[in-house]
Amino acid sequence: MNSTVTVQRRVLGRIVLAGAMFLSAAAVFVAPAAHAADETPDALVKRLSSDVLDTIKADKSIKAGDIDKIMLLVDSKIMPNVNFQRMTASAVGPAWRQATPEQQKRLQDEFKTLLVRTYAGALDQVSDQSVTVRPFRGSADEKEVLVRTEIRGGGDPVQLDYRLEKTPGEAGGWKVYNLNVLGVWLVDTYRTQFSQQINSKGIDGLIAALAARNKSNAKS
Image (cartoon, rainbow, N blue to C red):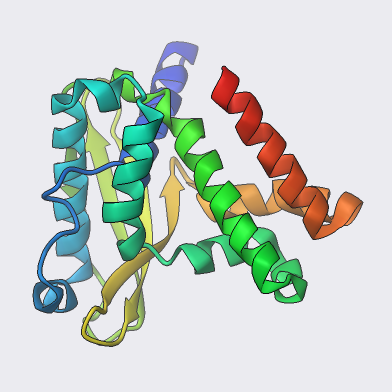
């Protein structure tokens, strides 16, 4: 694979990850609770992925990286459909269990801000991408499943896989807790980074490092 194609795949991977996790329109994730609970995981992924890409293409302020608007959409539309506590806990690793509730909250807040700011800048690259969900091989009775997709549009297809868990209750349904872009799991990537900081300066050191990184990203 030549260097141009490699760069293209990396850029598109960042775009897809940004859209899939942190951006949506009013149509995304607003199905009634009964529908959300009955929806199969592959149908959910197809719906959210297609709607997200369509919204990015249509909203100039989102494509331009309007952080305030992105944050509003994340909090109101995305977070209810992601098990972000599990995602953060997995990224932090064993030290999560030793963290106080306040530390856990701060870790979730800083981690969310980090992810939004990291990927917001790639959104202006979205153009004609489309989503294809690969044949689902799981069972509706399973509690955790893997849904594989491909993003097509300009160059080679980009692999984007979702791990989802089934949650109970009236507001239950499938919730995303990890993503794989181009063969790399998001949580695993951050776990490696976070463990180094925790081993050096503990949980408070990690929180401080994330806050500093977010502050620096806000200025860039």
